[in-house]
Amino acid sequence: MPLRTVQVDVDDAIFQAALNRATREGKAIGQVIGDFLSQYAQGATAGAPTSYTVQSGDTLGRIAQKLYGDARKYPLIQQANNLANASNIWVGQVLVIPPLNSTPVPATPVAPAPAPTPVTPVTPPTPAVPTPSGATPPPQPSIQWVGSPNFNQRRSPDDITAIVIHSTANNRLQGVIDWFNNPNAQVSAHYTIGKDGKIAQHVRDTDRAWHAGQSVWKGRNSCNDYTIGIELVNLNDGQDPYPEAQHRANVALCAYLCYIHNIKVDDIMGHLDIALPPGRKSDPRGYDLNRLRREVAAALGEN
Ligand SMILES: [Zn+2]
Image (tube, rainbow, N blue to C red; front, side):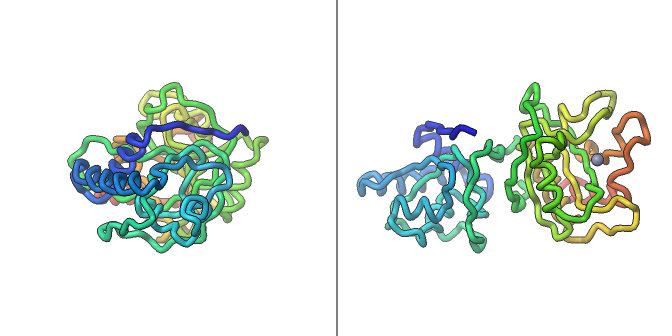
């Protein structure tokens, strides 16, 4: 796959990073931009780079080594871009690079950085764009981008109005990741949640994953066109439990997706609810979808 190189003005990078931070921290965007601009001004006078486009094979550590001459300074970049997970960067992403002598803003809680893994040249996950809503934004759960070749474009990238919950009929997250990475499989979903609550993302929200097959929801066919598919690792035999950690991660992910895409909680359904002909699918067998909807609504501040 050819390398994607994206040219973005530094002002755009600053704006996007500021928007992310303002959303997360509930601050006025003007205040956050002011902070960034003062960092930018310091960096510019010091002759330091102010933005960087992620290349194939980069980690935050390697970027810090390239730009600062010291890989251990990567938390500065992580914090300036408000990255909860140091591994969650992608080729083509434009990072704000703070000057080396800048003091990290103490208000930003940064999770302990896991060992950063090199990024592969894949299409980026969709940046979180908040929808106008009075609700408190649910936090973005930790998501590991794993990619899949099995997807195509939605006719309209923002036509995302429902969520389909599946179970994988296997018992290993890595098995699902491998299968969805096999081009012969011709199947995928946007996300899979392991029994331990780990969330893997195979396809970005704005692309069309292949999970629903022949299907209909509220009179509209071909649910892949307009839904996000979430797989739960489970044998789907009606006996295998869905552990609490997995359920909690699903609530957090669904609440986040409902918030950023403006999806109604009533439009979270199971594969069994939409498959054609009726009865073709039974997943997610044994999973309490009513409880999921209730808890997602609570996480969104709805009653
Ligand atoms: Zn299914």
